[in-house]
Figure 1 (cartoon, rainbow, N blue to C red):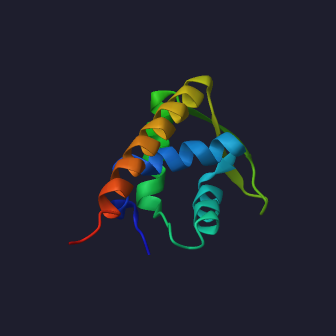
Figure 2 (figure 1 turned 60 degrees about the horizontal axis):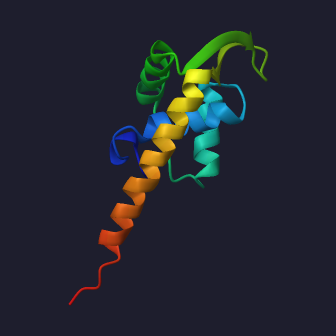
Length: 111
């Protein structure tokens, strides 16, 4: 299983931004959704997720509001801001360049 420290630096931010761009989510739902969408390959600990959410909120890329969760508890729901939309595009473009470069190296034929 991949852990956040197995991911390329900044990838967690990209994944969070993408998930909250789709719909407002609370921290637990972000973690669960990431695990589900990656077929249990990507899992993020609370110790990595919540500091990342805090940093993204400080940067102005996400905003939070308190709402009732599905289990009737108060939870902070995160959504993407306009600044966050621009940052998501930048990080997505960077990810595509990086993953393409890595794929070129990985696919080299051994001789």
